[in-house]
Each structure stands twice: as structure tokens, then as C-alpha cells.
Length: 313
Image (tube, rainbow, N blue to C red):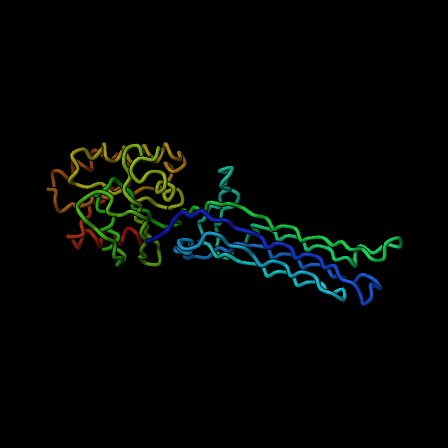
């Protein structure tokens, strides 16, 4: 299962405390400084399943700085921590709801939490008037951030449409994926991916009227349409109102983000083997003003699948 959202707590390492120490017989301070805490970074990689790492644990912290020692020895700095996230991840501040970073390219590296500064040892507090200072600084706390990691799939083609429009079956046929299919809505509960001719296809779970306000699988999956390059809008030939089905999905996309209406769209009349020639022509006529490409296709019709493959190439 593809995890596409996670709530996490990221922490920079705390700084190490300074040391209170004296040479033998109180002849003077020699307490060293604490090391700085490690910083926490995120690194983007092209692996969409990387958010799955947060199903077991959601709190991550860089290493603390080591406390100072005697003989003016400074503590070692804490090791930085690098968390690997998928390209396409939006990093959102949980408290404000604002996006603070967007990972858009592989190997993009971002500092998320700074480590705390190490505290000063009592050697740093020596003065003419006080040669035996008994105070040292504690280390500073590292930054702590509560975040929402929200993955928006970056795919070449996105299969969209109402539930039970045949999207998963098409994905399986085109890419050899093994998505569950059944004759009832919401068989696909998370985005599914496949690769065809080095291009990524995403099966976006079925949308319904009101999805933009959270109904059905709602906005959790509408977000994936935002970064898809070309939409493959699936409409079943079994539909009693093909035009209404088309407009329902488009309307929810527009409500969610009007910019999505500008994406290139290919309409796929799925399950075309269940319709006669007259009904297919009527469906094309109803949709002719919606897209330049209207393609009947059926997983039971080898020629139609080959024609679709050539179009995608």
C-alpha cells in the first residue's frame, strides 16, 4: 500500500552541556564546552514508497552534542540526520497549515531543524576577580517541528474518472501492474503506479460529486491530479449519462484547483466492447467539444489496447 500522507515530529539534536571542572586543588577552571547538536535534513529521491517508513515511527531526532570534559576538552558535535523523502512531497507546518518546502527534484536537500548550540564550560567564565567560576552553560535545545508530509504523485499520465470506470484494469493491461479490480466502487483505496515505455502511469482512486469538499476519497486524492502531466479521463460505456459523468469529475477538479483544468486531457471510453457502434458514436458526439482525443478502449479488445499504447508513446 502506498502511504501518501504522514504526520511527523522532526528534531535537531540538543547541544551538549558545558563542563564545570577544576585542575587539582582548585587551581583554576578547566571545564570544556559542549558540542553542538546535529541538524536534521531531508533529501528527495525518486521512490514514491518512502513515506511508508513512517507507519512504525514518526519522531526523528539528530544526535545530541556531547558534553564538555575536563582539561578544556570540548565535546564532539552531534551527527546530522538525513531523512529521505519522495520527490513530490510537500512539507507542511502542522500548526499553521502552511507549506514550508516542496520537494520537486531528485537529490534536493533541505535543512529542516537546526541543532542546538553547545554550552560553554567554566573555563570560558574565568575572570580576574573570579578564578574559580563554578558555573557552566547547559546546551541549547535543537529546533522541533511538527510537520505533515503530503505526497503529490508526479506522473506522466493520470487515470481519472468516477468509481468503477475501469481505471485499474487499464493500468494492469498497459503496465503489468497487479491492482485489485472488482465490480464495485472504491476498489482502489490508494494511488497505484505502473510504468509503460519509461513513462509513469498513476491510477487515481475514483472521484465522486462532492470530492472537493471531502466526500468519498475526497481531496486526499484530488491532490495527486495536480502534478500529473496528461489526464486520461476514463468514462465507462455502461454509463447512463456519459456527459454528466464527465462533467462531475471536471467540476470537482475545478473546485479543488482551477489550474488543473488547463492540463491536456484524453478521454477514454472504457469497456467499449459492451457498446455497439451506434452508442459509441453517440458518446463521441456528446464529448466532441471536450477533448481533441476521444478513444474507445477495452481490455478485451487487443486492437484498442494497441491503439492506446501507440497514442501514449
